[in-house]
Length: 472
Image (cartoon, rainbow, N blue to C red):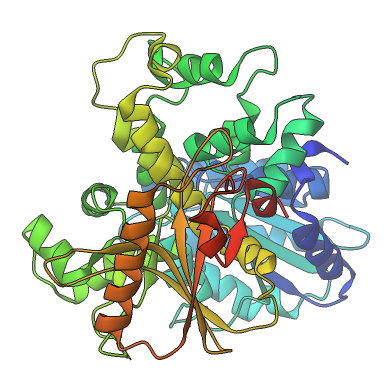
């Protein structure tokens, strides 16, 4: 199997079912920039499209119509350029109807949000095309694709106008997990140990394109210097491009992400509003929800006096590339910055925080390691509202009336719990029980790459999760 199909087995199975369904299909494919949407579709269909068009990033209406017309010509059209999108889709209908075909006709429109320039009427025209003609063609498969996740959700998946409830399938392409990242790198002949793969994930996340830029002949440190820190490095401008591709107005989103990057447990909406000096309004809520939809941040609820704070949830940064960029982008760097800073305080501090983020996005693997695959759970970070300011890296509340209080530590060998850490953990447990009115059993749990070294404090730990568990 092509290494670019690693981790996409479910999506490939669904695409095959769509091709075999024998009915008209309208499929929306979305996900963040560089996650592999275009490659998946092009490789699965082997570029055998009855019609294929791609929007122009930041293009104007005339430019987008020109691009669409060029694709019509490639598909067999030979006439004047359409004046608007209604005409463009009418010409697409005529072109598809006039040319003989066998089997399915696959129409693929990539970078769909780009076509929707201000006041262009593109979405209405697309809806009219599908409702009046496309949905009646048993051999038609319409696939639309876009990185602007919030736009795709608002205008296609959750459209309240002409395209309301019209998509027959949606495919949200997520980043790789650690196991899929390991498989991808092995397919590329990387003989890296798991700890190095974890550190790769801390910096690049599970984004296939970023991983494709790695060179197996270089060390991880050399790769990161080449990709990020050197002059004109390929990923040095990726942070800006990432948010520009996700949102047509990226500035307010970037400000939220930068505020969350400074607070590892996250912030409530009201705290974010205070930090940014903006109203705690519906507009801010909408911005936050859009970031959640894009998997850049996550929303979670904590408990006070035994009750969930549903009205004021926390938001926490989960995108690892953003965390890496915001930690190191403003430092005075040299071309060999990363190789020269290994084992320094700034890198060690970042590693600890990034490993916590890795654990948060692998909660399923942690649940499996704890034997909780069939038990309903809620998980969140917790911080005290009292002067002690106690914090717990991860709380896992279980339906079987137990609570795992997880301490997450990054290390290069077995971790040794010190007397002061043991005392601090007990203080955090006491604060959590007192402030949340918790009546469930407490299970002190440690998540470390290589487990705990045995001493008088480790024997009091009820559960351990290791790096290998995260690769399950």
